[in-house]
Image (cartoon, rainbow, N blue to C red):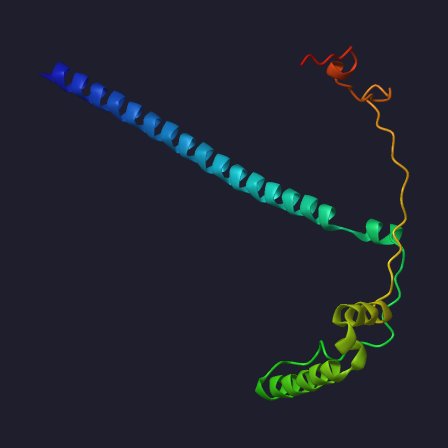
Length: 163
């Protein structure tokens, strides 16, 4: 009888020992998974920061601003653009523009030739934009040689028309 108790005690201690080792293994696995997820979240944050920095570099136009010519601001700021359009201001604007339109219709030059009068008004109010023609750029292949235009081979030979 004593032998059976010894075996059962030894088997219980072995099973307890195995169980404790399994618990230790699972706790190590759990710690490793936790550290990996923490590293992943840190890496994601770093990636987001890097992407933001790249975007900020792309949107940094200070070097472009330095290379552009400076433009002078208009002498008089237009007050008509700054007002808010509400009921009263809309009514005043309609009356003002209606009066201007009736004055235009009464003008003799407009009555004689409306298109010429409009054209003359546009010429006098808008500056003329001078467009400079740029010489054609020569196109080059990737190896640096000039590109040639392909001519159709149909036009090079003798042509005859039989009727």
